[in-house]
Every structure is written in structure tokens, then in C-alpha cells.
Image 1 (cartoon, rainbow, N blue to C red):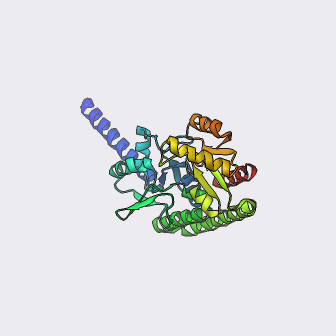
Image 2 (image 1 turned 180 degrees about the horizontal axis):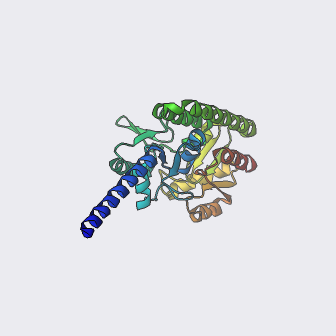
Image 3 (image 1 turned 90 degrees about the horizontal axis):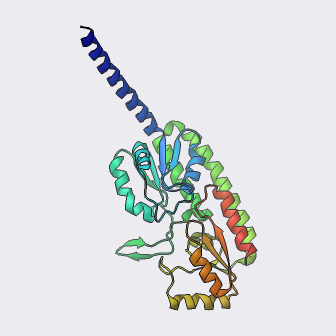
Length: 288
């Protein structure tokens, strides 16, 4: 008899544990947001505050073109109720369908909706090869904020006033950054800068600057194209090459030696969007 009751007790404990774990997972799913990259996390954090847990699939300082999610990443994505994707990362092209397959009831939202794509080309009615660094443009950052706020208000209307207030504060901060950069960069309007990977396409467009990329269609430049770059650098008296921290600096250093330039590293994927954009502006003005 004792053995019989012990068995019932064990079964009851197991059922209770499973039920509690299911409830825990449900709470985590209802309050968890996944994003592709760190900069998106900044915008989401600003709007949702402490009401949601927000995590980035790609960790800080990782290269979004080569990073592969580990099992713990997939586990987090499976529990997320919302996934904010950048909409144009090679990483997402390779993984987004798998993310959707493991989290069928998760809402996937493209933060680049309503953003005019640049740096690529149209083929068969679709835009390919666009620069995905939309957030480095204040005008596009405002659209990203619109997309996130709209999504949160639709999904969680009970907290709509909270999201709306945070959204207005974020939009005001974006406007301040934009105004500061316009004033800072106005003296060099129309000037050109040399960059290894063309990640400042939208930034350059906002502030009337000319970005000259060393990469040729995402690859190391050919000898012929390199010769053109050297001629352009000499013609425009460009003495600086910008490159992002997620890429190896060695090839950039080799090219810099050929044209007698110095190199400057920056991080387009930094979390603190406002200070990062202002720092990029300072780098451009100081190395004009």
C-alpha cells in the first residue's frame, strides 16, 4: 500500500512540476521580445521599458554576416512572443525561416517597413543587396520607432499609453541627434569619405556626404577597382579610411598603405544609438 501511495505521490509531483514549468514558459513567452541585432534592442528597450525582456540573437561585437545561433539562442527565440527583424541582414536570410518554424505563434515584424532601401538593385520586382544599416540614419531611425511603437500598441493595448509616452520621448531624442548632426556636418556637406564596407549609406544620404566604398559588391576589390579608388583618393585628397569593428582591419591597413592613409575603426552595431551617431559625426568632421 505504501509503495502504491508513493507511486501516486511521485506522479503528482511530476505533473505539478510540468504544469508549473508550462506556466513559467507561458509567462516568459508573453513578456519576451527577440531582436536580430543590438541596435534594434536599443529602440525596443526605449519603448517597452521594463515591461518586456528584450534580447538580441547576435551578441555585441559579433559579425552579423558570419554569426550562427547556438542552441541557447534558439531556445530564447522559441519563447519569444515578438521578433523584430532588420529585414535585410544576410544572417536573417539564412535563419529567419528556422526561427519561424520553432516559434509558430511568435509575431515577426520587419523594422525596415516604409524605409526606402538604398545601396542595392531591383531584380524581378524585389530589392537585393541593400545596405541594411538603416538605423544609422536619424530619419530612418524615426521610422523604426514608428514600427516598433505601432506593433507594441497593437499587441499590448492595455499599456498603450506607456508605449506612446516612451515613443514620444524617443522621437524627441532622435530629433535632437539629427539637429546636432546637421549643424556639425554642414561645413563638410558634399564632401567624400572612404570606407571599407559601405555601412554608412543612409547616414551619408541624410547629411549630404559621399560615401566611397572599397569593397566591390561585398568582396575584396579587384586590382582595376583598387586603382580607381587610389585615383579618387588622390583627387579628393582623402587621407582616412573608415572601417567597422566587426571586420578584420588587416586588409584595410594594406590598402591604407597603398594610398598613404590612416585607418579609423567605428562600430555601426553599437547599442547606444544616440551617442554612437554623434561619435561617427565627430570622426567624420575631424578627419575631413
